[in-house]
Length: 599
Image (cartoon, rainbow, N blue to C red):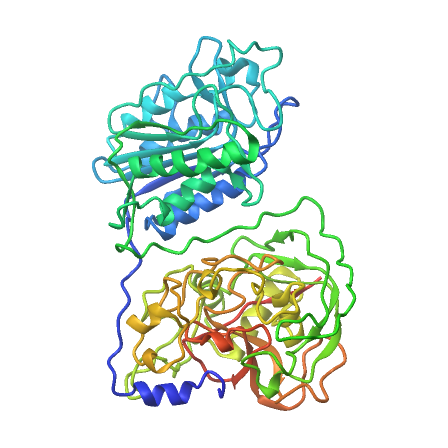
């Protein structure tokens, strides 16, 4: 691998002891019940467009930041009244699912709800189940007073309740309760029971807004920003309830006034000193971002005129801005996929692009049929399911970028940097990656494979002809990609010898997939994190390459093309056109893959 210099780096680091990475937080007794009610059956109740996104983002937060076990996180989408009673109990019997899960005095419990709330006729607030009539909340809603009382009886070590709903009877799409007077449409919050900390999106007579840009409720968007570190006012590594409330008062309330000309103030009840998130002081975790599915297929993108190149980031062919893509899974533990629309692009880099290598040219325009590509790099958990199903050997001799050559080799099962199930799998050869794709194809009956190099670059560019997908952004590269940066300088042996990025992405090694914003097609970590195998044989340039966006099956086929860079890539190599290679039977802890699927 000439470009990332693995052999050279191993010689440089051969006499340097590795630096261990702290393990992800673990809170094995903690429980979370996360509800996202987007679609309602009653004709008068509009959809809460981003409720499922809210729920998924909160699920990821409790697992990846708070250390909750996946099996202890219950996610309900479009929960009915019966499902909510089953989860939390009724006014007569508090022994619902939460009661069975919580270990008294040992479990921390987090409850999250995104959806509609309504007032009752006699006062008090109700969460609105998906099958409820908002005019008869007393009969088919779920009362907040019941929720608070039942959770207080569980004797959990702590209970945190986050509610992205308002109780005014109104919504961004219109009033929920027909012919109700302004005096009636007020729902008071009950006092929080002892031991509970409750944050809600708005005061009783206010409307809870949506953040259409972030695809979240305005409350959820700012709660997540706060919990991922923005609310840590004293930089001590602990976000308390009162700190989060202060952050919401400042940022969410201002956003509601500026965007919608309305008042929205959060409400905090209970223990305001409760610590809601913890991380190393001054080093909050990176915030992952979500792109929601679109109800209809994204239209094919129109080809724009090709302007004359005039500088290092001049466009050499571009596409109209793509629509938000649809995502899907073909099975429960299959990778999440993004449909990539057909289009045309110019592959490779112009001669004047900074950091360019000769292997990145000559440029040529290619037409690309529609296909699907993994939203994320294949994770350790996804690859483990394949190994368990096929008894595939782990493979030995993985090149370890931070250990002396004479140390025992590792396999994909090892986690020398503290990797968890949501980290990208590494230490897999091209042959391993191809076998995984073939297994998916057999299992689903769909044509899974590794992407061609041309498909990979088309999807990575997502309509941009610039050197990086974020070239138009003012923020530094660390806001968008996990590469070698200031964190690596502190924690990666030998990194001082590299031309590091002068910013901090918060990750010294590989990060959980989705930790950085997606590109315009909705693909995460397309640059950085781990290199990604493609189907193509290695050729030192595009002379003689296929005229279509298919894999190049001639050349040095014992070596296969890698794309995208890794956590140890320097900024000059963290470019869309950058190419590298590795022998098809070799493995590296900086190399993984994502899969493609033919449409």
